[in-house]
Every structure is written in C-alpha cells, then in structure tokens.
Image 1 (cartoon, helix red, strand yellow):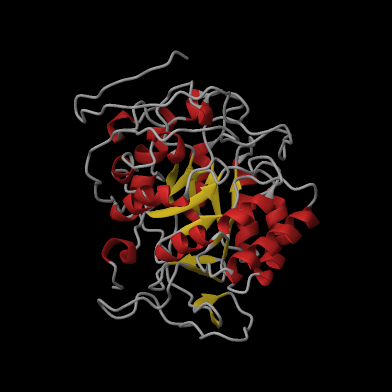
Image 2: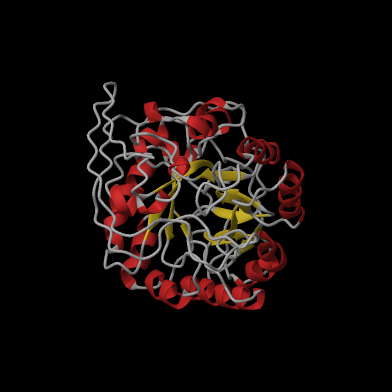
Length: 414
C-alpha cells in the first residue's frame, strides 16, 4: 500500500511524521497461541515527532451504558485502596465497601482507580468499563496532539505506547498523559520494550526508578500502568514468579495505581492469566491488578464468549488490550472484531482497539499491515474501514457504549 499523507480541509491538519528505518511491528518469533507474534514495535531510536491535530476534544456519546453497580470490596491496608480481599499489616485501611458514587460533589473514596470482585472502579467507587484505542505515542505524538481527535469518539481510555530503554525520560510522557485526562480519558501508560521478549528485569528497573515513581504518583488519581507489552516467558511458572516479583517491587517503591499484566506468548496466551491470575492477585499487596489479552487469533464467536465468561467466573479484572481486523504477522486471517466487541459489551468487559495510526505502511508499529491503522491522518474525520466501525458505527462501538468516569470528567464524585 502506497504511503499516504493527506490534509483534511475540515481539520486543517499538518502531519509531521517520523521515518523509522527498521521494519515494524508484529513482534518477535516466539509465537502466541497460534505461533505468531504480537503487534507493536520493538527496539529502535524513535524521535518525537507530532501528529498535528488541533481539534478540541469532543464530548462523549453515551449510548448504552456499561456502568453498573459498584462493589466496594474489602479494605486493603498499606495503600488505602480497596482490594479483592485479604488482610494487610500496616498502613491505613481504604474506604472499603462503600456504595457507588458517594454524595453529590463529594471527594473520592480512594486515591487511585482500583479493582474488586473482578471489576474496575474509579476513585469514587463507580464501575469503569474501558472503551478506547491504542495510540503510538512515543513515535509520532509525544505531545498528545491526536488525543482530542480520539476523544471525539467518546472514548474513556487510551493506551499510550512508550519505551523505557531508548534514553527518553518518562517526564516526556507528561503532555500525552495530561492530554488524555484533559479530554476525559483514562491514560494507560505501557512499556513496549518487552514485546515477545522476556526482560522484566529491565522493565522493573525503569518503573521503580525515582523519576518513574514520582511521575506515577503525580498522576495516580487517573493513571493505569501496563507493566510490559506482551512479555513472553519460557513457561507459566516463570510468568507468575517474575510478575509477582515486579508487582511487589513496584508496590514497595510507592506505586499504588492499578497494574495491568498482559497475557504471555506475545499477548495471546490468555490461558496463563486464567491459570495464574488468582496467584498474581494474591501476591499483590494492594490486590489491584488488571489482566489483558491481545486477541489476534481467529477465534470463533463461541470461543470469544467462552474466554470472557471464564474470566468473569474467575472474578479476574479483565480487558482486551489489543485487537484489530486481521491476524498478525502481516495482514493474516480476518478476525471477527464485530463479534468480539459485541460479546464484550454484553458482559461489561473493556477493550482497546489497535490502533489510532495514520494508514502509513512505513511506520514501525503497523509497517507490515497498514490495515491495523484506524485513521488516514490521525483525525476523527479520517476514520475508515473497520476502525470507523469499532469507533463509531457498530451498535457495540466506542461511541455507542462508552461511559466516561464522572471522576475523570469533573474531579468530583457524583
């Protein structure tokens, strides 16, 4: 597919795009459930660039709410966050078991988003069901210029693509993280260094550095941290042991936001999350984990429904952190993305589409299959194909099902 740079008259966007010298995105050769890699770049030396979008962040279109009643959970000492049970020594107990929302205009019950009984809640105790996209932040849009365009879909969350080993300070993510919050979306900051690799030691060093801890604490009222993109362990026991260690190290460093853990084997092996999820949750002093699978295998509608039911039966907080219209590597098998979001919507399960790119096949993150890109120019008005369907037009789309957190919108609890 030829490289395309377009300027839309309606948005007067000028794109400053970087050229990446190496091939892209579907990660590694250590395959997932089907033996294939995940999506997303690995190493390199990305420069900042910008995705030049100046439109204001639109308001959400609520559609059918996925909200629901909150379950406050039991108090979890030490961090002040409500947890999934268990006791803690030390610290001050969080506000456990309080009902959704609190009184009008009241302050939050917790300092961070938190999980309880298999669900995710905002600091006010309001259930939070993610509806959003992945955004290639580090490569082309560290300033977060495209985030107001994403917000026009009504998205309530955005996963921000970052690297920890490229000599870029975490403080450079400030603009994008703040732009997400300013546009009423929850930022999910993730490290892509581990894509289809097993290098959690480097990941741990990054997240527990003083700069990273200070950054996360500054934004803890809104932020979720995705520890490592598609880290791929040699076996399930190593997966559980290493993730338990990094979670505990991050908690000891003073990080108490929800920590998201991707499935193994390039993000596709959701079974390891089902098998080891309870063990990992119990190893977390805060009991505040989210489990994420990247569903790029050509699963049937029945298979999709079953895996979601299995996570809910296990009471594990679960989202679909990546999916698209094709199976990587390359533009492989066609995937039932419409069935996926419909089944997720029926169950109140969050999802994030991959990705809000600009349909340029020369980009590392989608270089081998431009179809993964949802837009032509990063602008809302340039959404096309499957991207437009999942963002706007399908009944289970972002625009028709997203419910934004009142805490993120107003800074108060309704």
